[in-house]
Image (cartoon, rainbow over all chains, first blue to last red; front, side, top):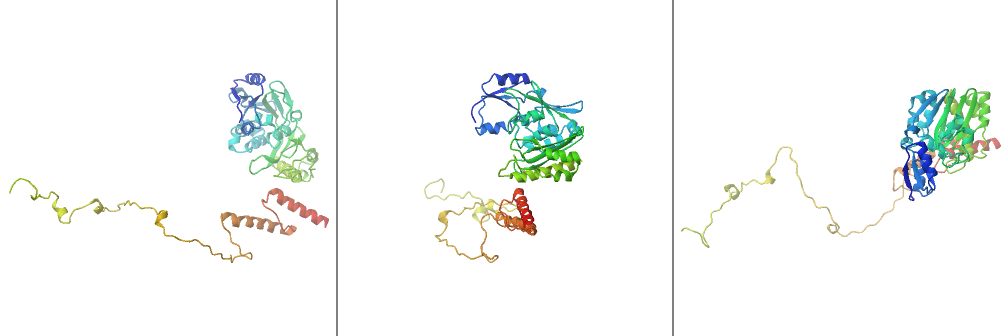
Length: 265
Length: 121
């Protein structure tokens, strides 16, 4: 670990100000990726701006046909929130299966989405449920937000403050977890919202989360387990590593999608 | 003769019972259910006689290779049991070998390659 300055922000505006006035400052949310990265000397921020004390960034609110989750809401609090559980149970279930209890009790939705790990669970929820990322300066639709592995369209000093999820008619998330890390080898969110069907895949793509348009068309024709399972995904652009080959991941996408359809009903 | 002096007799002051073999010591206390404490010396290197160590190799009798397992016993029987179970399950597909660790990916690949072979054959 290299030396850095620790600053605790009292408000979102404070935090943005602190990052902008530092040499190479970074926001610190739950720190589930950032802290290990710093400990391994893979990152050397001049300042860490801790968001943990900003109460305005925590909580869940129900809106007109949507549920808004503020950025510093921890996974465990999304999983146990009554609004999320009743309006978007797929999202509560997803949050309940991220990592392990230690991660769920520290990690936040905003931190996960700002990091955009290609095997993280939340990106599949945001893209599959067609959510909107709300920052201190603007709103970004899911399609425009994810910009490749560990990359987003967030500008320097731009802070994710909340995520607004439209309430789907049906949705479910199923993943094949790495048995050690519980990161998704392949995770699939299927959703029907106002007649639109979306299928978002995390863990498999070299460029991070993506929509499986072949499965979307198959499910638009017939919302059945078999329709999803029978789609033969191409392994082009998929990850191949010690955990799983690209063609195994391609196979798992159809299997996970079909299980998600079964779970969604 | 009165007074003291060299050679004068001295009256014994111990109790009569000690003088007659009837004294009681703490060792003699014995109550029902009583515990005892002992100090035991542990053996040390210089307590042992000189000795030589040799080995006598005997082949295992339980398998054709005549080998025996050593070390962590739990790591000897279980991997072959698991791999044999997987190979038994995959035998109808003609799969005869799978390397450890038998990850889901490897099992899937073995099945996949087998059905591809069958389709081609």
